[in-house]
Image (cartoon, rainbow, N blue to C red):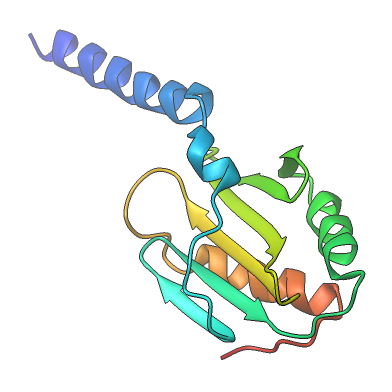
Length: 138
């Protein structure tokens, strides 16, 4: 009886791992441009958003170069980056866009769960620093 329980737990664990790795990403999140729209850092459930008014014209290109230099990040479409965690391969989506006033918006959030334990904020702070966009920590 114990043997079957162990087999069932292992199967459940492997199934969950496969789901995280193979589940399709939500199309709406790959294109979303959510608020808030005020300048600065905004902590959100499952992620973070940064709005930089007056960002340099090449800010998107700088962020793209930094993002794609990370081996765990891919870009399924322009302005969208998917970064997967090391072991479980949980996906996080980062969107980069400009609003009509020219402010740069960067929104990084998880796909599964409710809390990213600050992972998206730390990655975004690193990307912003490496891109030389100087928004700093807040």
